[in-house]
Length: 577
Image 1 (spheres, rainbow, N blue to C red):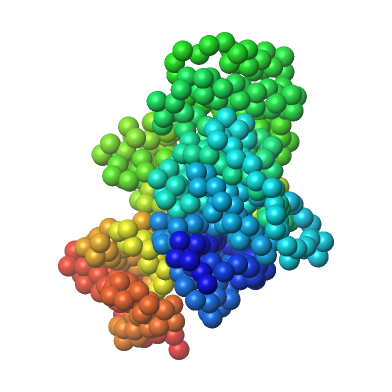
Image 2: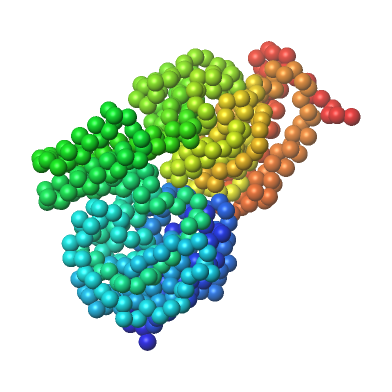
């Protein structure tokens, strides 16, 4: 019979792992042992059907919690799972790793026997074919070894991946969980924080297996992984001024050693080798202060070495932001574009502090007055010098997972364009359903090579001509559509003013009003019913209503406002014959 203090929470962050999830879930369900269990899955904004796979495969399980959230990266998702756990132990597992059948039981038994360690971890192996590994072999009588001061070992390298670990819930919370400032170094930041919290217990048995065919999986020795782990080390040291000096000194030596390793690999020139050797030698001398700054410098050198190691593969990326009086949100947008090689900002008739903000982030600022959207977009595109261009509006944010996918995608992609999915927010609420047409997009072409995208001359949502193969990214752009309902109504006013001006300028007859009314009703039904806006409650109704009012108000403004101003308004037509 299970003891209450033996309960285990399985915490699994999930992002676009539909292909691997069924096999992973089967191995979690097959865990042997008499302990009580709860299952916590955090879907981090998956776009490949992972959420449906989760719900379908766990429908008959007991004590299952599935958390749905916008994409924030694996560090945030892991922390959400840790926060939700009620059991005294947490079994971590990535959504593509396989557990041996005795993994949880053998780690739990080890922590029963040794009370001081904050976690127990076993061995792990990579595999190419699941048919070649044995998952149901018994793991009884595995030898145990306690590392009483694991911090230095953690400074050298990450001792484990999540699937190898069973951690005490209290320790995972007390140490602060993963460092969310580094969303893709979640494994190492958690290991560092736990190493500073108490002893580790090593179990001499293989408890987890890792497939090599997972896109984006990094070995512990890649330049990017070395950069991320060195940055994590710098943040750890910076956050702990009370850390003994000898530990800080040792951390500096480890960071400098990583620099030297990258230098040997990148084929750097003589001056660069000398510079990195100087860092290495400096780390051998006493560093009296600013250890974190020294380690950050090493991380920068490693990042530069990573770029030098792949000169032929690197494509330059230009991020283009077009803004008009956006000082309230421009900095938040530009903050997320750090991964681009250049940032180009187009300022259209700005009278606020937008230029001062843009100057902090960009060397290429284009200012002017463009009544039409197309010409101002092309003014920015013409100023971009990159091989690829990423368009971002001031009310949009590029999360780290999307930034990483973009850099990996353009490395060897053929010219053309990529559709980028969108997650739309009203205030802080993620509204997934009901968007469409001019009232919010779910995907659009934002990543393209020069010449692959041509903007039209309309004032509001110009037509776009695209050239080349259509491809799609998986990670989503975050779009801060409106702050609240008042903001939504004000946007309706702007959009209909602009569209009415377009209608008047064309000189073409307006359709009969009854046609526009029918179009408005069709838009409402499409947004509220076909696009499932009803699932968003009152917000879904508001979005469908705004989408319906857009063509009707535009029609009326084009006809009535033009007459009030003494213009020749387009006559109401009879429709096509």
